[in-house]
Every structure is written in structure tokens, then in C-alpha cells.
Length: 197
Image (cartoon, rainbow, N blue to C red; front, side, top):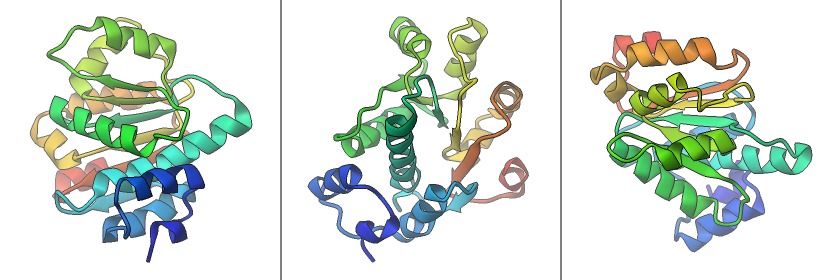
């Protein structure tokens, strides 16, 4: 199996090839076609198996395709991850994969000044990658408009639960549109993550 057979467009395939990737991992081969079809998805795979590409590649494809067709702007995709380091890592992967895609991406996490993050959220960057705590802080300040949100990804869901982010996830769920595509990725699938899914 190759990335060409999964339904990704030429812009992403070019970036993937330039990154040196040739064959999708099992989680990528299973997830990418389903996400491209618009289905909700729960993906369970160990760390280091390519989960980030499994959700970012098809989401970038859909964001790029719809932007060309509709010309819509504003935040359309949200990826939640438990730590600043993971947000930065996902952001780096997105930067690599979206090399030939016109897309604004915001990284939102604590431990740094809020100014640039507020500006990106008010501007309506299409893809927001965030930790729940900082995102909720900025939402409380009125910096975020998720009315056009189409995609929600919970990455490392088991770690988010371990770190006590369930109240923020519940609060966020009340704010974002009900009609959206949901993706949950986790290294393990204990009962509490199953309930979240």
C-alpha cells in the first residue's frame, strides 16, 4: 500500500514524498480513508506509530479542498492535545505536510505570552492546535469563534484524561457546533476514554 492509494491530493502527496515517507503505517492506512469519507473515528495505536499523520493528513486535505471550493474563512478545525510539547510537535508535522497548502495554523499553549495566540484566534486561523487549559482561558476572554468548526480531534486522549482535562473538554463540547466530524486518538483505551469517545 502507498499514500497514493489513500485518496490524498497531489499537494499533500508531494510534501509526503519530500519528507521521505513511502509507506503508510497501519493506523494511517486504516484512518485516512475513513476520515476523508467524513466518518467519526476512534484510533488506538501506540506512541510512535504515526497517529499524528493519520489525522492531520486527511484533515489538511479536506481543509484545502473545501477552502478552494467555498472560499470560507475562520477556524474550521481544532486539535486538542495535553501538553505544550505535543502541540508544538503536531504543529511541526502540520507545517511539513501543508508545505503546498494555503492554510493558517495557530498553536495555543501555556507558558508563553498570550498576545500572538489571541491575535491568531481572533484572525480565525483555519486550524488551531491547542492545550485545553490555555484554550479555555482565551475562550473566557472572548478570543475564539468556533461557530464554523467542522473538525475536532482529541489527541492523546488517555493522557488528557490522566491530566484532569475532562471538565475543559465538557465545557468545550457545549460551545462548539454539534454537527462536526470527531476524531479521537489514544495509545490506550481504558473505560474512561471509551466513555469519552
